[in-house]
Image (cartoon, rainbow, N blue to C red; front, side, top):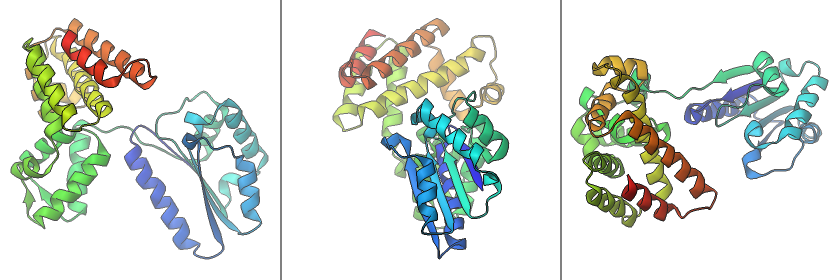
Length: 318
């Protein structure tokens, strides 16, 4: 059996990957083998040799192939496609399970992608937001034996956003703390690590008022408190991306929070906060700022600029 799991929601795809692994190992407690090939780690292994080698020692095999599209290279994709073309009946083989897992959306024009999409058990995990994110949180809380109020839900989304890895951790912490009682907004404020989000909101508010001194001070407070500079940058990117989404409708005359939330696929509470911040920016300014953030992200990750100096310059020059 061949599986193909991919998409931007790598939290849910990882859960599915672990589910497949657990089911396989429980079903094949004896005489089975498991291999993990993660191309993000720079491995230099031929999938053909892995499958054949394991066949000498066990009848049931599970091979997890991670990020082959993202980091495997053209030759590896071609060789893997050729291998599966040669293996007649591989997509129905009950003794062999191969799971292709991608942490993002791969290019769809390769032969391997088209083969997997057509023949494998394919699951696309799209990034969730808006009402889908709200439902996901409520379901997660209930599965862990808890309850959450509307205010608690809105605050949790405003503090954490759509990062499901962090969201799952915070939900687990809140449910354990409340021990069956309803999670309220005050509980979220008390327990969830929201300082970085608050500082980003405060800095953007200050930039909208053209109060650069306050914005720079808040940035320095974040960095001096030990917050990772790349995470701080990612939060600026996240907030201004949301402002651009909201602004694309708001600046065209749409004023209903819930209507904007529906079409922008954001939570109404996020839209409400975003509209408040939009008062200090024009649509052209937002596009210019977002472009600068993209350039800063690229330059920092490629070593062309120090991330801390880049953040400082970004805030000072808006």
